[in-house]
Amino acid sequence: MLKRLDKIRFRGPKRDEFLGLAESPNASDSECNEDVPVKHQSSIKETEEQRDPAGPGTMSAAPIQDYKMSDADRLNEVKGHLEITLLEKHFLQEELRKLREETNVETLKQELEKEKSKRVDLEQKMNEILRSRFCSVCELIGDKQKETLSSRLWKWLYERFGVYMEEFRFKPEENTVETEEPLSAKRLTENMRRLSECAKPVTNFMRNLSALSSCHSVYTSAIAFIIYMNAAWHGWVIPMFLFLAILRLSLNYLIAKGWRIQWSIVPEVSEPVEPPKEDLTVSEKFQLVLDVAQKAQNLFGKMADVLEKIKNLFMWVQPEITQKLYVGLWVAFITSCLLPYKLLGFMIGVYAGIKFFIIDFIFKSCPKLRDKYDTPHIVWTNLPTDPQLKERNSATLSRRVSETVCSAGMSCGIGREEESGRAYNTKRGPFHEVFNLSENERPLPVCENGWRCCLINRDRKMPTDYIRNGVLYVTENYLCFESSSSRATSSKKNKVIKLQDITDIQKYKVLSVLPGSGMGISITTPSTLKPLVFGAMIHRDEAFDAIHTQYMKIMNSTTATTVTNPET
Image 1 (cartoon, helix red, strand yellow):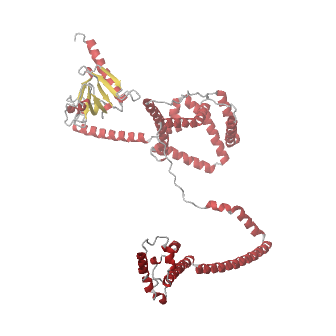
Image 2 (cartoon, helix red, strand yellow):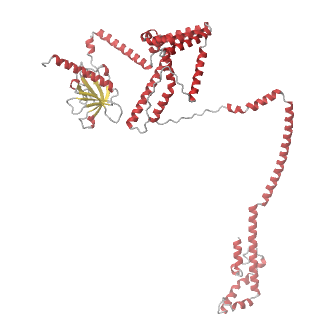
Image 3 (cartoon, one colour):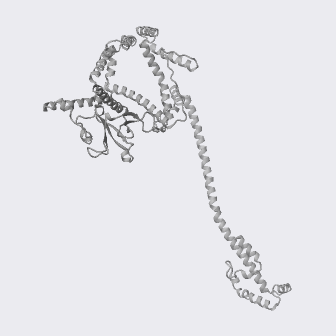
């Protein structure tokens, strides 16, 4: 707006660019009647320009023109200035109106009045609160003077223990999931080493007890027996064990402070500690994991055997053994009800001392007496585990089936010779039909179900003939391989090798990268250029022993016949 006013002021006497008085916003009626002289202004200027040959821009014509200016021209000039002032007034009124709308002075005044009234109200409320607090303080002072001993006690308890009441609020338990560490050979060996180190105190304690009962050191065992029996005679067995625990803790404190105190009935054998290897090959890492896994397997197996035996003892799996425990518990219950506890403790202490120092020594020295008269040892050894129970049940079932078959065979008049000559069936059919053998040939008892393996024939070049999966059997005279890809009973994919034709049999390692002695058996025959390999056998050692034993029997019988008949 101010910029527009500056432009109008700068223009000065250029009245042609302003609006007429009739078009101005605040023009009066009298000003509108003077429209005709304004219109003649342009014509007067044109006539003057025609009369002046030099044009309006010459210096000589300007003063003459101002001098000759008439009253009408002056009136028009005054009218132009009046128009400018009217426009300025109009623009200023618009600006004032906008400023009033923006500032809202009236609303600000009203809000100021409201805030003043609020301040007054708050001051009144604050004064009232101060008066009420002053009154309450006066009342409290009066109440304190009137307090009894019980109220002071309750107040003291609240001040002392009221803070701890917040800790007894029940909060939902947060389930935190532990992150599992990835499998690492180094971490696995470190955990096994830590476990063995932590188990050393327990194993050393059990070894010392065993050495004490077996009289490893006669003088130490005799002194311990005399001290224990004296404590049991006077009823000091429990104080003696407590004193030994305190003594052990005291010795541990001295050892922690740097003292060298070492006492053991059995001298400790220091195991060689191998330095940790930083860079291990793949085969060494694999062998390390296998060793640790074997130790963990044996440890878990022993723990499972102990727990299963305890479970079967209490679950009447072996009734004749659990019956002894049942009778013993009843005798102990009746004795504890009839005899005084001091006499009962004396009897138990004396029996435990005699059993630990004398009876166990005799039983350990004479194993036959232990197997015959040591009741706890007999009960524990006869307690079955779950795998033993399954084997017993399967053996009982097979025995019953065989008895049923034998009774049926006897009723039908089948002799033992005919029963032993019965054909053995494989998955493809009868054994002698699958391998085109006589009916007398059947698998040995060691391999009735066969050994699963794969036949690697290195003489063949086709991949389908190079490796075949199947089952390996051994009979009295033959080594038979039944291929799993054979569809007919008698197939060319099956392999039959005469044990007498074998020239060499050895354990074989198919992949040299893997640790250990391998999982294969190589067999050399005159009909093959390269040895046949039966690989990927889980029970490789068992199969090798069975095949090698039967092979040696045949070779020994062959040599014996050649010695007896040298002419042939």
